[in-house]
Amino acid sequence: MAQSYKSLKEQFVSDLSGGSIWEINWVTAVAPAAVLLWSALQSRRDFFSKYGYAAFLTDFLLNVGAILAATTIYSSAPIALNVFLVLPAISLYLSPKFSRTRAKKPSQPTTFKKEYGTHLGEGNLQSLSERPFITHYRGSMMAVTCVAILAVDFRVFPRRFAKVETWGTSLMDMGVGSFVFSAGLISARPILKARAAGKTSSVGASLKSALRHSLPLLVLGLIRLYSVKGLDYAEHVSEYGVHWNFFFTLALLPPSVALVQALPQTPFSVHLIALLISCAFQVALDFTSLKAWILTAPRVDLLSQNREGLLSFFGYLGIFLVGQAIGLDVLPQKRHTPSVIVSSLRIKFPTLTRLFLWSVWFSLLLFLASWYRTLGLQVSRRLANLPYVLWVSAFNCAQLALFCAVETLMFPGTYSGADHGITSRKCKQATSLVLGAFNRNGLAIFLLANLLTGLVNLSMDTLAANKIRATMTLLIYVSTLTIVATTLHLYGISIKF
Image (cartoon, rainbow, N blue to C red):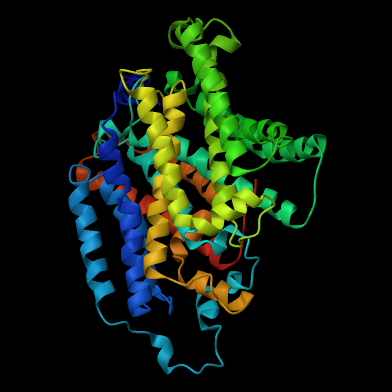
């Protein structure tokens, strides 16, 4: 890559100040709005039960294409795009229900399973795939992330959506935090399974298992480091540092969380630990020279060269633990829990209400941290400070609540099957195949998205691409990701790291 072009690329993503939180909320609201329309088509017209090419194309355009449109051609009118998605959904919801299954024999309950492939067999009700709204949330989050990491290199992607330099909020800043939050959410599943089986493991055993999970991520981080340096690829040093990258941050999370698992594993206790870690880091930033060192110190050694990546880890650890706390609360479908207090709260407050309350709680904390009459703190993804942790937590709880509201409205009684198999089929019928595919192999698709992003940037001048060429390139890119993800999903292939 020519030095002049590399400098232009770096300047294109540097010194940005972001946009408003409300605009980010409207842009990302397209994801649950698209799922609302998908759910209306499925629940009222049974549109996706016979999953052919038309169903796949519709699924793709709604759940991936709408996200691409929201971040590019509709970036200045996200409210209009939301209206275009919600109005047909309302119309379908108010119309008489039609189902293809009326003409089918009752002795063939596995039609949907055959249409989707072998991976739709009977599964454990504790698995993530058995909570459609969580699958939709995670799949949509992955789709937004994959769109943004390439779109940011084109002028069709507004600069206010790209990562800010130091202070402020942007769509991509939220994307990074949401990725970590989502990972924390799903990390609650093995804890719940072990608890249900009555199994306990020592800190040493948990740490050993965590290190095994970290090793592939560490290798991916090293591969990215050497490829970026070897190809002289454009990089934004103040994002993580000279050598650090996001894969190293992900690799550090499992062993760090394993050390925390010696403490009580309840939603309240885990979220409290997350807040304590984030508050302690904020105190260190405000009452020592740490903040000034991170933002202004010369890069003279390995530590100072990678200070952003190393120290922002404390914020990402807090986000991961908040996600885990929410997972411990909403993943179980059964009412039984080891704690009498938690069990009574589950009976009194349904999942949707609890998610709403979590969102209000973190929003209130964010307001108190940011209000000029209290702490007056600004959000900083670069520091991963306390307001950033609270913003990411409030946003993701609200997103989960929206997806849960869609499921509750469109597919009532999903978990009230007479037996395990009926409930499983109901859950599958309420789940988008495309979003399920992005959810199933999220990290592998994220890695592929990074590889394709590098390939596109090395093969064309993204800064010179006009709106039409940029949009077509992005459409081919997200189509490739969707086809790969869906193919893996249909063949029952799960790529684990």
